[in-house]
Length: 415
Image (cartoon, rainbow, N blue to C red; front, side):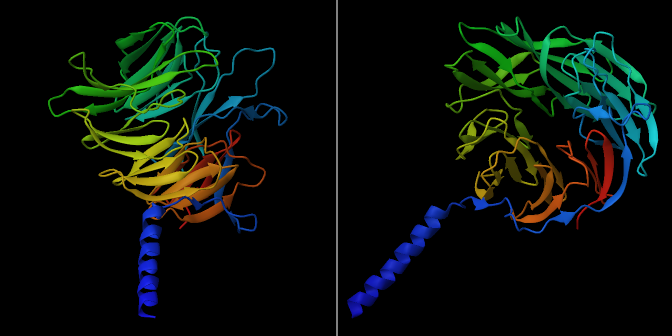
């Protein structure tokens, strides 16, 4: 009897140890069941953002930029309905005050600009820069007047911004046979684009420089962190991702990590800078390296990570959104929590206070960033399908701005 009790107790210890070791914070279901109670957004006001002169049958088309806050006002855009006989879509910017009143309208497009809607928008001081991949515009946020504009006859894919600096990644050569990739720079003041660095095609491998993140060091040196994707074209696609630290001030490469996470890859992403660390990911792993030396501090297997993973810094944690949503500690890579619902998130997300705001299937989900728990599940506004990926959150007024490419909604921020 005594031996039986001892064996039983040992079994309990073994079972409990096994349970703790195998947990590693398994994916918890996140997407709510069919009978989960939906909430309704508390709409303060909504205003039509299209042209009042066009008919209701035409209205507007396209996604537009995500709403941006400026001194309590909100900037949005829309694409007027495209006539099949026309090649141009003149995307229009509009600035509204906190009560929904129109302040100004902008539609000062270049004649050559027919590519379509704006892909990026960034505010610095009293200026905003918007681009659709070829045409770039800098606009005064107070008056709505154009400060400068240009057009590059190259294949421009990704832009990034830091304070008053603009970085533009371009590709050269025929559409299906790129020969090189280059990174350009200019300031918001409007000087011409300046080439920083370029990579040439090597055999079957074509380069593609991703958008850089920036760190300005105490000595004034500007360090750029970016991924160069080297890929073959065709069914047997083979891709290498190389992470670079480039000193723009000294015009030299400080360090490089070659093919840091072997596996199937598509495109590239923008690394994150957090203090003295640079954070990046591959198809299976999240990495953290010392930003000055390039030495790996930690790496966390998180397979499978989808190519379009979105990640942001919240306090000292990395919040990732892809085929799951998870939180990692930036100091050691320890997994805080992870949630999985079997759905691939293609949208970006917003962070407000201690919550993440995620659009999925037209609905809005609010997640507690400390625990990963679902706090709210909101239906979209009636007769609306929001196009917003990252809503604008005004913490001072406790409101959020959402756009569906036809209307701008001001809604009360959930408590």
